[in-house]
Image (tube, rainbow, N blue to C red):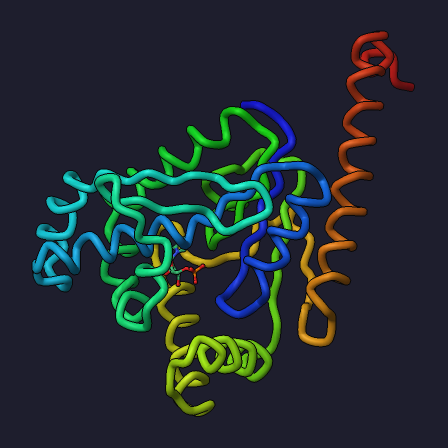
Length: 242
Ligand code: C5P
């Protein structure tokens, strides 16, 4: 496995996307948003007109998904299905509501995890999602778990939806956030969990910039430690410990 991989997991609204992008840009790494992949898989199934609560139909439909993920420097990933740009279309509330049907299916997860690992093979990557540190990149150089209170996360999501011109109420968004947490955490495979060796950061009272700076500092010290270890290994010092 190549090196320089940082994973950032956490519930929706913890600030993952903005923070991951800032970290990638400051460290000169590539940025991968794995949520966008599950969103694209969901849109594909919705367009196929199948019953989303039929796991066999979802698993069958996913075989025809021609997904192209383009990692853009300093920007959101570009997502194409069959050559068509769906970067904005995967962000509608309908897609968000339906994701759990698709993300629960093992065949879908296996397929997307393989794609994520392939992207990771080149190293130099900051990747965000729910299972990046626990399952997809268990040997990442640095694992971060971001969280914030329900209220703070719902408030952020509410503002974001309002800015995009979508009408909703705070209570509705709070209900959605709570329900999505439940679905993401209770998923048997690839569910949202903190990796044992992840660094936990509460983003409730911090700006994205402050959180990104903490992660950049952690990443730099990890990489420096690893370089020292490689030097020691080369000299054979590790075999002669007291
Ligand atoms: O990160 P985002 O909110 O766009 O993710 C949308 C949904 O995709 C999540 O709520 C989760 O159900 C699913 N997902 C997942 N595994 C990932 C990333 C996202 O199951 N690694």
